[in-house]
Length: 56
Image (cartoon, rainbow, N blue to C red; front, side):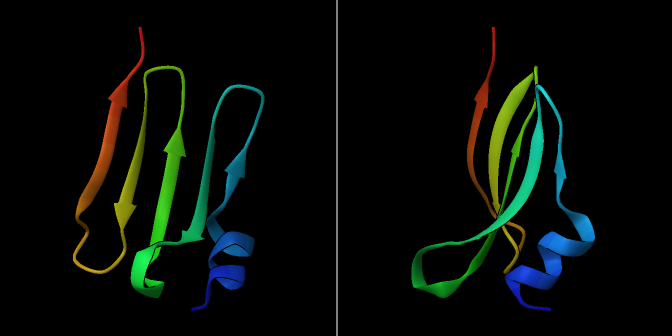
């Protein structure tokens, strides 16, 4: 699946949170997640956690 297909199928967005797929460094797809508890970026290649920032 390409990024557009991933976003059409799995992306979520509401007032305080979202999940979306973006192009990362080296053209590696990355999922960005944000909610009231934290935000994170996870590589789809190897499921590496690239960033995690707790809220509060």
